[in-house]
Amino acid sequence: MTSYKLFVLPGDGIGPEVMAEVEKILAWLSEAGVVRFEVEKGLVGGAAYDAHGMAISEADMDRAKAADAVLFGAVGGPKWDHVPYDVRPEAGLLRLRKELELFANLRPAICYPALADASSLKRELVEGLDLMIVRELTGGVYFGEPKEIIDLGNGQKRGIDTQVYDTYEIERIGRVAFDLARKRRNKVTSSEKRNVMKSGVLWHEVISALHTREYPDVTLEHQLADALGMQLVRRPKQFDVIVTDNLFGDMLSDVASMLTGSLGMLPSASLGEKNPRTETRKALYEPVHGSAPDIAGKGIANPIAMIGSLGMALRYSFNLGDLADRVEQAIAGVLAKGIRTGDIAGDATESVSTAQMGDAILAELQAALA
Ligand code: NAD
Image 1 (cartoon, helix red, strand yellow):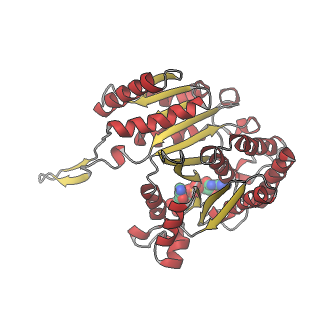
Image 2 (image 1 turned 90 degrees about the vertical axis):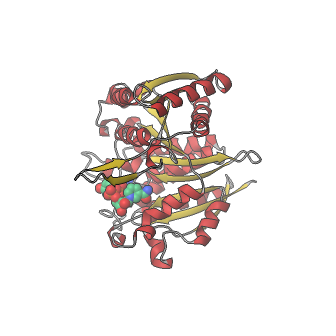
């Protein structure tokens, strides 16, 4: 049986608590002979700072680079609010993203029927929602130069950020989106602001040419980013894969996240360039939420976003789509039985612990694979 190398970085706060539930699933999958994982564990964020004085050690960076995929919990917390800037907890995540060249951020927004009432939108608008936002993660206005505040000498200052995209950056994120669409409902919506931005004109041109050249079988539509924001809350089920730049993707994926109810439900993946020899990509999977210091240590965090991130790793790093489907079905099955952690409990009087939720999902998965 193929064995996959997973590097696990639980991090801080609720990170280790939700990761423990993923580790239970990994252990069972290996024991039961479903898939074999070689799991190594490292330190990141505040935990790494306490041990090594840095947000991730060189040795752990090397392990991350050697792994088939990295599973990341969460970093940060008040304990490290005053550590030097370059070793702050988030620096560990940023370094991983940079050195693994993770340019594509995938954020699915799935609304499980059992949770449709937890959304800020009406049930009929979100029930069964399943869309994917593909955000460019390493370019655009967050990184473009010049990036500065200059003193104009007349009592005024000027803040400058530069939105810049090259053809290759747009093409490679476009390919990720089209490839994904082929495995889903075969539709891509590309979004920019070509009516007012030159980078938007180029984005539109490059995505259109890529579509004609390599993906004519996929349906492509273009929506201006402001209109898309409106459509996301008006009729979100019209979308399958949305591809957009770093800035618009940042905002639109947060809007999409609210469609699904709780932060504790949202997984994500960050992917790098495809290795032409192995056909695999560097990849890091993490929940969208942070370390939640307000509930850390209480054993009540929702592990679903972290378990969903494992599901994404199975699908996108290991090509185990069927097993990923089973993980998602196990989550849906547990929710349909009314099992809830506090964040998604709504008016229900009873909620379960992190470990009870993890055990319930594992039991559901075991039953499905028996
Ligand atoms: P957060 O996501 O940690 O928490 C926001 C709110 O959502 C809190 O009330 C929290 O209790 C709740 N929540 C989050 N995840 C949950 C879960 N799985 N189950 C139940 N409830 C959950 O965001 P924050 O409070 O703004 O940040 C806390 C710390 O996390 C900060 O140090 C921040 O820098 C860091 N952070 C890290 C990451 C990351 O590691 N990728 C992302 C965001 C924030």
